[in-house]
Image 1 (cartoon, helix red, strand yellow):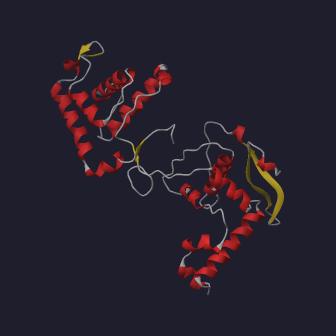
Image 2: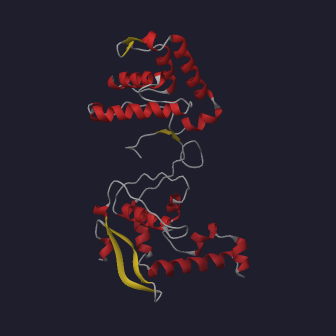
Length: 279
C-alpha cells in the first residue's frame, strides 16, 4: 500500500527540486488530525491556492469525510469533471474545436492527445486511473445553487424548521440560532437588525423562540401571520402593543409579504429545504 493510502494521510503531491527542476519520489503527506477549526491559504495569483484547496478536498473525500463547500467563484464545482476514464471520448465534449484546429488536429484526435497528456501527467504525480475511480465511486457530489436553477435549487426562505431537541436544550446554541435566523431574514429587508435595539429583531426572535420551543416549524407565510397576530402578549415586561403597536407590525408584515410576492425572490424559495444534516 502506498503511504498516502493510509487513513488520515492527505497526499498533496511529491517533493520538487526547484534548482534542478526535477520531481522527487518522496510524497508530501499532511496528517488530517492537524486540521484545526480554521485555515487560510495565501499566495499570489497563479501560485496554486485553488489547486492545493482542491487536493485537500479530494483527499478528505477519499477518507470519507463529508464536505459542504461554499464556492462563490465556482472553481470547486470542477470536482464533478473528475473523469474516471482518461480517454478521448470523455475529453471530447470539453474540447475547443478552434484550439484543435490551431494544433492542426481533428477534434477527436486532439481530445485523444489531451487524454494521453493528462494520464501521463497525473501518473507522474502518483494519481492513476484507479485512484480517480475510487474517488468517483465512493463519493456522491452535488452542486446546489440557491437563487438559481443552474444546479440543484435549494430553498433558503421558505422554511424555518424547529431545531433538534438537543439544540433546544442548549441555551447558548438556541440563542445563536434564533439570532442568526432573525438577522438573516431582516437583512433581506434592509433593516438594521441589531439584536438589542431593533424592535423587528426582538419581535421575530421572540416568535421563533415561541414556536420552536413548541416543536413547531414556520414558513414565511405563517411568520407574517404571527407578526400580525402574535401568540404572545408581552415582550420583556412591556405589553406587546406598547412595545410594537399593531400598525407598525402590519407595516413589517407588508414588507415581508412584498418579499414573498416578488418574482425576483421566487428562485430562493424553490427546491428542497435547506437541511445541513441532509447535505
